[in-house]
Length: 356
Image 1 (spheres, one colour):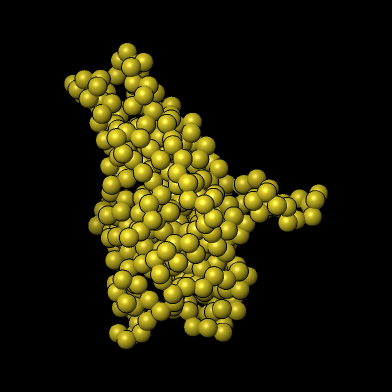
Image 2 (cartoon, helix red, strand yellow):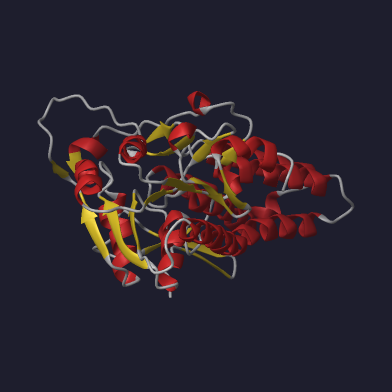
């Protein structure tokens, strides 16, 4: 059994408020795109795949209630396009919302030009949004199998694997199962997982609050460490692999992920630890030549100066709070794990841009 962070039933959308975890488990009703934008922007829902799913489902929820106001298919298409552009602005670094939203606009345009009725048009758009939720788990499980198979080929048959992960990439960051944490979950299901180390992931503590919560829930052997303990961990204790997720990957393999990922990659290289990035192909942005083109979201200062409502920093100090950093492709030594296979960073464009 895995955690469920996104619920869609009978045209109603609910999301698990991840700001309250691990102390409180509470679901929020999302009735429209304004509420969808807010829970994404406030990080009540987070994780690149989940952001795209919740964004599109918030549009589906709004279509259920506001549909009678549309007099024509062209009005409906304009509404869909405007709402998607609005939703993309909630978290600019994670590309999944942009790619999924642009796909939805493209499909909406095709429906606009078809002979179907206005009612059928609406239902098909809603169906496309719901399909994202249903297909994400399948994508994650396929991705995780590829990654697990690839990693285990590099190790002796009787060795259990000790891994390090950063931020949260599990059921709470997706429709279910997870990307990097999905790969770790697959190792556990095969009885090959020795131990998981997860970082706190300051300043928002997604590792301490969310990943640790999932690891305990799944009964995996795990230990929480501070972000600044990674170097000591790799030096003193054997780590077989670093496994992280991604919010956007440029076509050369440069990868944007939660702040702190870059320094993990540098330390992994120094200690000869394979570094893996797990992401669905919807996280790969072939329009970007390299990581310098990836927009990096900067978050409010209070997320760094406070934990919850408690101030922990000296009053008056200035804060710099980028939510992501970019790991250069040459540091991704293990490979980029997708639902279409595991690739070296320099293979992405040649293999994925034309299909495999």
